Image 1 (spheres, one colour):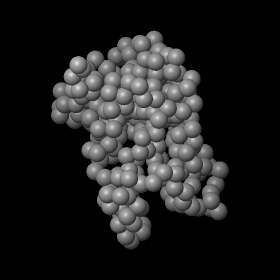
Image 2 (cartoon, helix red, strand yellow):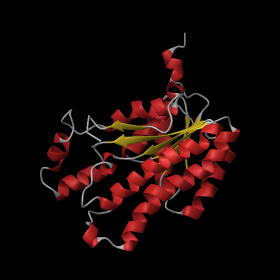
Image 3 (cartoon, rainbow, N blue to C red):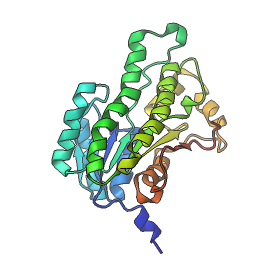
Image 4 (tube, rainbow, N blue to C red):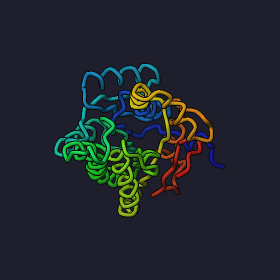
Length: 258
């Protein structure tokens, strides 16, 4: 019988987490490191990547590497992936977490510049990062790609239309990538968080009185999640515990309806 703990063991694996210097991205990076993975901490600012990587290394004892990358820069991503491969020789897990929702903009107020900015990070970034990482995973025997979506992809709202639309497209892209790369033993899944405490949520709460109470009421558990509560689901999808799971969309939302 397989030891359940062994299923979640990521020793010897290399994981990239984009947007991992704060929020749930950092929580996921630290959780993967605690499970034994070598972790690449990435966001747009190199000094912040270095600081967070050092902090995770100190708290977990895992090998970490801070490497800046703006996922909205299509042409800059290949060099990032090449650098990671040069350092570690492999990539086993990719968490496409980096995402933006710069400001509340209604469809009537939408500009092409704003729309393209959101889609360049939330949709084109995961596509470009995944297409660069997939051949590396293939050559290493397979891997797991985890795209971070949102329950906003299921619940339309006038002030989150670009964000929600980009994440809904990411849900479709996830299944397409899973179909294409299954022969390479690469699993591709989506995690769709509900309301997690974050800078984005805190900003919305500052702009709208009673916002946290309102979003809490949309969950069955009637609360906003703590960042650590994303760690279990991401470890599941990153590890052999989910070896027969691909093209799926797992909500981490306190019971919000899709």
